[in-house]
Image (tube, rainbow over all chains, first blue to last red; front, side, top):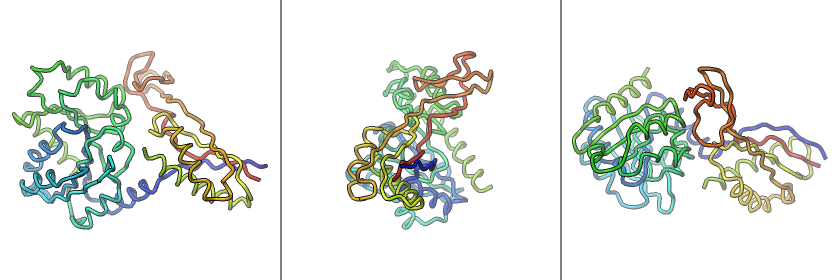
Length: 216
Length: 114
């Protein structure tokens, strides 16, 4: 018997496909939006993308188990969208994005991926994105960053949404931010309401900064 | 639950290295898994045992998991810590500016062959 020393990183097929996408999307800002179901990802995108759509070439990949409701909502704002129905899968994979880009094309300034509502599995699947944007609504509890630490750790931006409901719920924005910072100190935080429009301009600025950084 | 995909990729690496070293049979495989790698050891072993039957060279092998704890170094005061909780504040000065040193591994470290 002999021992063979290897020390090789295990790269899954998904990671290889994501690396391929990253190569093809060199000048395109790619943001992967993740959250629990019902945190307001689509509502936020409807409002924020309208602020950017006349300046930049934008496309959205929508991931849901079933229906084209979300892609229909995005298209109604005048932004290109492609719906991926994952069936029984609880997350999008890089190959889904490749398929969507086959229809949307690679000639973009910004690609937004709205992942399936789930804070567990989407953390484990690289989609070739530049940043994962995590959304949390104030009805979900301020300790959520700590309950789903792998996703919190993977995030680049953290949006606390539905802040118009703060007077009605026991949610401390400060506590939530403290929990998240202890897991990922580099997170950028935003507080938003799609009802009142508060904070949405800051999210648009963040996205615009990502687009400009990618264009170089 | 992406352990099946990881088991497949792990087996590819094992077979490649076993063949390159002229092995007839693989006895054991050691994989390093960091606590932050989001991989469930039991699910990975289950997937490995299910797939290995298809490959005579590894059919009798056992997958050993080397669990790696999360350790970090504070960028403010230089103290090092091992974290049991997924909350990375420096135990000396309280800063969140902690650089993780280990805990994100997902590697095949070695195989034993005949």
